Length: 262
Image 1 (tube, rainbow, N blue to C red):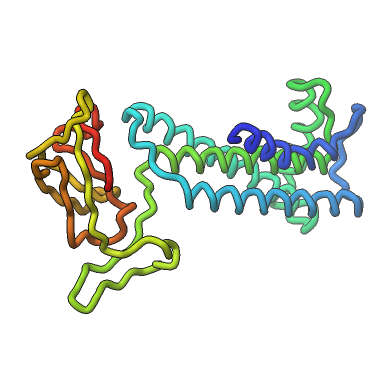
Image 2 (cartoon, rainbow, N blue to C red):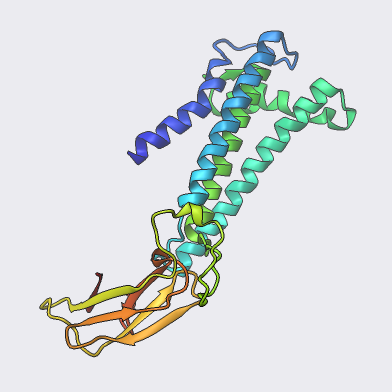
């Protein structure tokens, strides 16, 4: 379902610009009619809603891709920053064009001339069949700016050390206090976590192996040895169980042992 969703996103961003495109070549004008203003308003509403909704889900659900190599992560972060810079440049540029056109700010008058040159010479030189008027060009730049900004955000969230960290209090005799506990209404605070460790080759219980229970942000961890049944239990665990992951010491990639939460 991911690829149809991406296609729908691209279509929702490009559709307003495509609807405003001219089918025949002609002189580019920056004069806006009432219809143009209405089209820009509708396009801006669509772009803003798509931007906010997608970015919210990316930040809320995105987790760092820890399995990638450092080189891949650095490259992804570089292209993420570059993509956000390109998207910001597109959005700021069309904002300056609109300010110069509607507010008459002479300081930004050069952007109108540059914008007209891009629409009349640069874009037709790259895509001869595409001829846009001022409204279509602004919508196109807005779509590209939004797409580049969202792409950069996805890359940075997925490949950086970003993680959704909940603020928790240390357990006390009077109970623990957690901030934003409403985000996890079905998950108990400070749970007892039990695991069973098996040898991957024969599925036999792994006795007397050291199990590391580590917080996903790397701040807190616990260690304990399994019993003769390959089982281990951690008590007084601060926070939520979903914030932790367990592995056998020396087997971070779980290539030798299988760690199962019970």
